Length: 504
Image (cartoon, rainbow, N blue to C red):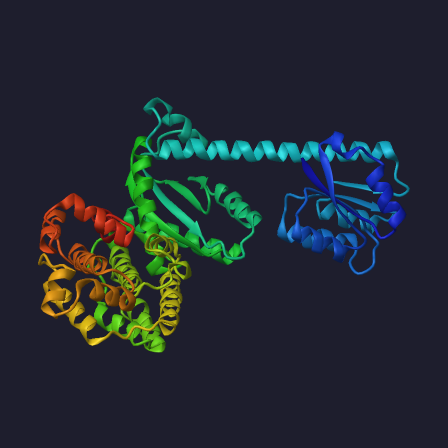
């Protein structure tokens, strides 16, 4: 059911508007009744509506000002203007603002009903177009994912506006920054691009375009220069910041899905290059794939010593000062994943309140969804600051015997050790020693030993090419399937998944 707001400063007329129609029979519900534009705007912000019926002349904020302010937030809402002033200037302004209908007081019931019905029909037509738009995007994604039969390729070629084979094509994926961006501005960009000869445009949700250039005469440098100039035009004319990844050239439309995939993969370089950049495959093929240098022991020391400023400065060094333009996106993500695992390890080791933090999978998702390096750094600074503040509330001081046991585990984690043999070594009752360890460390001895083994395994997975089976044996797990279970319990991801993240 569509929602309606009625706005009128005279209470008698306002009640009359509500009672003059059987709104429910028209598939409508009156959810707001306001006495001026300011009150109406506050109501709309709390619960938006589909149709606004408003007077023009009101105290605090008039109807046309209300219209403009709501349209800044939502362009689909429909307006019906009521006024007792039969003046051309009001009508002209209303038309310019795309008012659905403009009628005079006193209101004729049948005319009002007719205009409301027309407005509902307009909303239904807009809904149908939106559904059609979604369906078209679904078909394109089906095609670009390789799910279309070859005999149907010609249909997609025609949709892009290519009547015949030009001998060569070039695909690029354009992504725009959504900060403060209105949907209408993107529509304007698409309309402008579709005017350009030899360009085919597909709007792919939520925030990118597939652009196909039909020009077999341009070499790779010429193609990059073309898309760079196109990017500059979009920026200067529409004030829309974009990032463009230029895929390989191709000669047959059946190669478009593969060209699209390669262009899309370049989007991960947005995180290093930033908006306003245009990049091709040849420009990144020689980039360094090694992870950015990160001293984990140093960062760990800052966190454990609760030196927040030093930890934040180190984040700046790792992600801003040490990240070079010739680094690959994979190198950045590899470093970020290692840091996320380190933080998770500290949280588990000191049994910090998990409800206050992101778990490992959430933190990694934040990393991969960030638009730039600053976004990654900010996520880590927030997480580390929370960890340090939480540790200030914890008493992490161990008694000498617990420190000795922790040192024993660090040096001999591969051995088949247990609390009973350690209690005998330190001349203590095993049950009593277990209680002390649990109280001070926050977990059982068995859990601490398992966490230590998994921590070492994590380092081997991220920093060596050892097979997972060999890693398991190296840290004292002869049974690989048991190792997988214990590792996933500790980090929330399997050993194999963590290695795949490293390769990203």
